[in-house]
Length: 148
Image 1 (cartoon, rainbow, N blue to C red):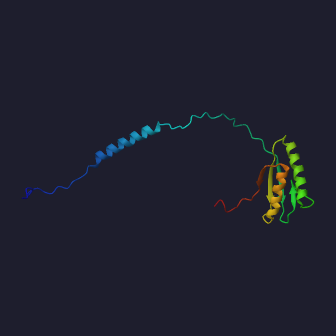
Image 2: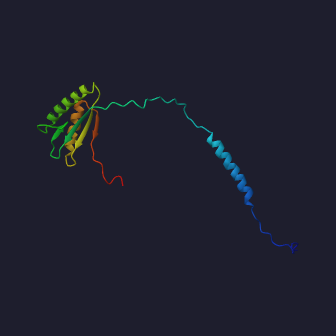
C-alpha cells in the first residue's frame, strides 16, 4: 500500500529571511520606543549652586605621637607624656583654634608613628573628647604599591 512510490523524499527547510525581517522590525520598534520613555519615581527640582564659591578651610590641630610615646601639638613638643599634660595642652590648642575659626569646629589630625603604642593614640583621642573636639582624622602615608 505504498501510494508514494515515485515521489522523492522532500527535505523540510526553514526560510530564515522573513524571520530576520520581522525581528529587525521589532528591534527597531523597541529601540525607538525606549529612547523616548522617561522613568522618574519622584519629581525633583535640584538646587542651583555657584561653582565659584569655595568652602571654608577648617582650622587644623595636628597632634604627633612619637614612637617613644612623646606628644607634640602643632609642632610644639610637650614637656612630659602624662595624660593630664596632654589634656591641658590640647584644650588650650582647641580654644585657640576655635577663636581663630570664629567659633567653627577645628579638625584634629592625629599623626602617629607606626611604632607608637595604641594606648598613646587612645590618650590623644580621650584628650580630644575632653577638649570637645569631635572631628578627628588620622594622617597616613600612601602605599607606593597600591596603585599597581
